[in-house]
Amino acid sequence: MNRPAPEPPRVGETLAALRQDRALSLDELSRQAGVSKSMLSQIERNQANPTVAVVWRLANALGVPMAELLGADKPVQPAIATVASHATPSLRSPDGRCELRILGPIDLAGQFEWYELTVQPGGALESEAHEPGSREHLSVLSGSLEVQSAEALTRLKPGETARYAVDQPHAIRNPGKGAAQALLVVVHPT
View 1 (cartoon, rainbow, N blue to C red):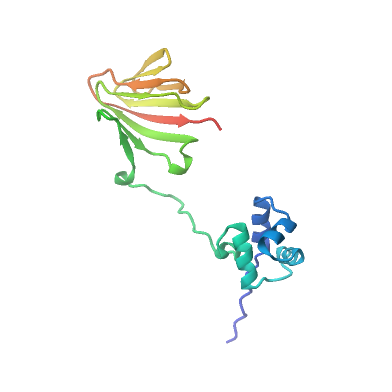
View 2 (cartoon, rainbow, N blue to C red):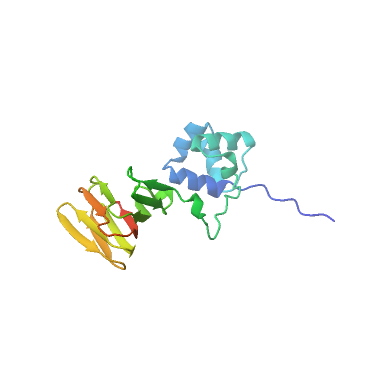
């Protein structure tokens, strides 16, 4: 039984996309990779298949692995990624009265962050000013919390949310007799 021979990888589309992502002209990539402009043009139009040596030069010039240029499958992200409770990092205040469980992915840090906040009675999470335009959103789940942003002060009970500027000194305190839990979202300007 004769099977048809598999087709060689077509790198043209991938090459063109990578070159455009890096804002390189054919001339610039030609110089950086040491591959003629006409050969690059033929590869991008799928009129020529490059040798391994040419793929290696192009991959190095573009700063990608050869497999990416050859169209190797990229790792598939799971439809639902789960982080176990014990794998969720947390931070504690020096006095141990405040704990922030880091719920947001690390790749969003500095843009958009969210935390589960637990503050013991008398505990305070005091912060210096973040960059201009930053805001926090604090939603109390249980207990009560006070929020201070510069001179403004408000008290929250379960189910309430405060939204406030954090480009100035600010604090979250638990004036109650029991622990308080909240969700804290920090939005940095884009």
